[in-house]
Length: 255
Image (tube, rainbow, N blue to C red; front, side, top):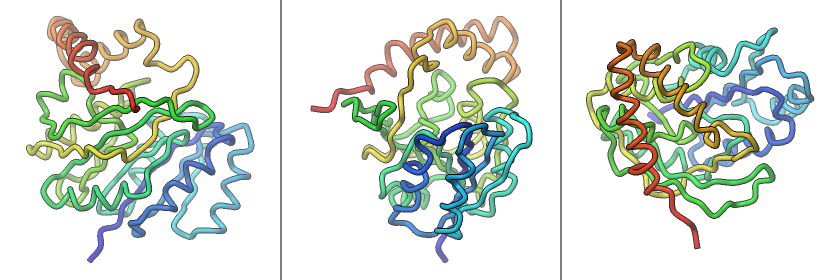
């Protein structure tokens, strides 16, 4: 029996890109999926655009927050409503390669978690000629030092490790989710070397703000994982070395 993949996509004022994102799911070579769209009280035309997509494909579902609750709550609602054997995430401004799910379902035969390489695009979907390469395998210990899983590439097997709900933090909920997935699995995640997704870089993104980078990662250790203040400081030192020196080597220019 083919596994059903639940794809969870939070949305907030994404009228300019949501069709491109949804179509990247609809174009998957693996057809057994449901796309769960969570509208986090958008004030633009996102919902109007989505209505036409709902009419075109019965695999697409829409749920709405009456008030803006943030990405964490949106993902958790999507997880609650998911009926799939596998859960995947795709933010409303990113998109997938058409072979993504097909390749990952094969990898999940020998692992509970799979992720992969992805390329960077700008706000207009223009390639930035940069690729973030995935590690071949990823352990809990390695992931604890830095987030090596691009959330738009990650999938996990619900049948083996259960559903995972994100922490109520402003940022880094995805990192904590994948840590919990690997903790439950007790097996390394498999990383695909092929480009399986495209990450959109917007102006003023968190990755360009080093002050926020330090603050939000510290909170992930301190509040997300419940580490002591001192232990969180120690892991922040390890994180900065891993993130700024080791992980950076995985970002390569595309000729």
